[in-house]
Amino acid sequence: MGGVKREISLAELKGKRVAVDAYNAFYQFLAAIRQPDGTPLMDKRGNVTSHLSGLFYRTINLVESGIIPVYVFDGKPPEMKTEEIERRKRVREEARRKYERAKEEGRVQEQRKYAQASTYLTKVMIADCVTLLEAMGIPHVQAPSEGEAEAAHLNRRGLTWATGSQDYDSILFGAIRLVRNLTISGKRKLPNKDIYVEVKPEMLETEPLLKSLGISRTQLIDVAILVGTDFNPGGVKGIGPKTALKLVKEYGSIEGIINAGKIDKGEVDFDVDSIRKIFMSPEVVDPKTELELGEPKEEQVYKVLVESHDFDPERVKAGLARLRKALREARSAGRQKGLDQWF
Image 1 (cartoon, helix red, strand yellow):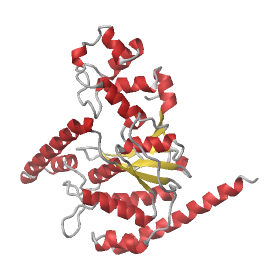
Image 2 (cartoon, one colour):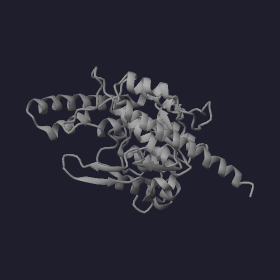
Image 3 (cartoon, one colour):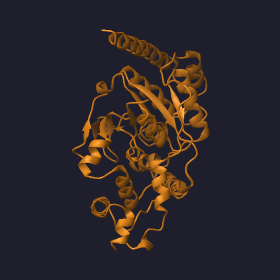
Image 4 (cartoon, helix red, strand yellow):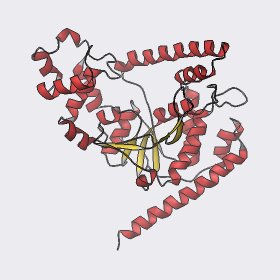
């Protein structure tokens, strides 16, 4: 994807609305915002607050850059995702066990690695995030099913300029543009190393990607299915991305590959049509409200962060001052843009 993926600056996104995959962003905050030994930020009652810290301060950074973030929340996952959800749960549980062993033995670096791998979101944590966004005046959308699918839908409808996620599935769901590293740009520590690197946002556009690969979006979905998706995690044994792309280009589809005898039908032990349908016709909704920045409700922000989760009042106060200023500038820029259309 090197030829169609490029680094961009936050300045290039000024004035643009981006549909952010909320759960994807929250897991990034939970993984990155931790003590050296892997312990997350917590309030006095032991409740994890790393996600709220990341959401509050990173969202302010985005709005200061002139970006209008629209956080899109997952709904009920498709039944075909059950196997992948259970697999992720097992991975987290195993990481938690390894974390406890590393903690007992004083292996600090491993503690952090396993602590990051064992993170999870609870309903209470998600509810706090929704409440905080509403208090900050930041738009959000509740998806009926997959958040990435809803974000891609908003993008295709022209309600947003791009989607923001680390997951390339956004392209499979039909996003016009995908911006990665949006919520984690800046200096980041490499896993298990005392080395910091500059992480910059990067953009991938779907049409140039498909053109460079010489395939359609449906064929790209077939490539993904062969390699493995959230809905058929194992894919087809022995087939990697390069082989999958070659086969799809040569034979047109998974059915064509099977008919040509390049894959035995018995190796495809999942419903190809159903997986295609999830990507091509996912369950989505149009938002009920305008996706615009609102006025922050400072008392509510204080209630969530300071009163409920023991955030430093002065830091929150400073953050709110930055947010108010950024929102004023965003609205002023919007009015100026409107006036420019008359001249």
